[in-house]
Length: 215
Length: 215
Image (cartoon, rainbow over all chains, first blue to last red; front, side, top):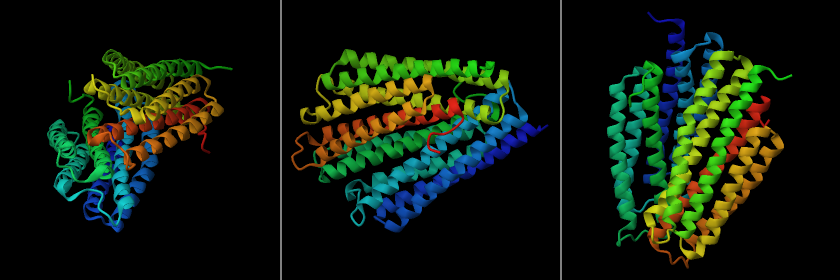
């Protein structure tokens, strides 16, 4: 039987999912902006990131209302606290997508990413988009199996990130130091975006079930 | 008159301060390790960061107990929620200090930072250490004036970060691409550490007074 507490927690999960889907759109658009040196797309991605930041307040308000109206204790209290921490991850994902879009905008009409490593960055963008999609699914299903999928996707991201760093450090890097700096930071942004998506999955399983997938 | 709620909130602030002072030690030690290419110091910094991570659970437990036992509402509830968000900032500061120590350890016995930019990195390390000290003071005083000091210190950090990037991108950079990658990431770690210290100040003022320093 669903209690009112669980219904409210489900509603909160729906709002968090909406934030996560916006993150998916933001990272996909930012990646297209970056790879196509497209100013309009970079601005669209930045707008989406600002929308996500505006959604934060609504989610935090909902979580605080849940605490105030339901006064949950023990495990249920920890689940609401976890939801508040989840908002923090989702807001950081948006900030990282915005950093990526900003690199594209700053370098326009030049390309920030040299042609030789564009396929790797495209792979990282696709992995990040997939991970935001998976995290959004977990936010509604609360299913530990869905969350476990994120670990595999994160391995893909780590592998691409290693490849990217290896390409910058290889003797035949002709991109120059400025592009090396940009690409190093871009790699870091994608990696952190992915870390937060994994954390969203982990925390969501705890929020939905009261158990961490690690234990 | 202090209520039991406020006494418990003060106790929580004390624990958060202890975490923040450990962050100050961690970033100071990590910076010394980096500038001196000192393996022992880098390992000591990493140990401190692991201690901070272990303190997280205690702080979160204290905050959740405060919610369960006092069932605060309205403004007081928001203040406990803010304390929980503060723990997140303090844990991230430790992770960033650990990244810096890890760069030193990975490059040992080589220097990760070329001699030409070592004074800038030393300045960033000093600024980060000062900011962790200020944030720890704010955590106990809750004083908006102390928190405002962090903004000035953050300007110093931003200025040094710009100098660091300019040095990497200058035509006379002789450090090579590998050092450019390391130094780019180090700059990002210090900058993020500083951002979190500012956020600790901002959130603490809200936790202590119920008002944000921005408004």
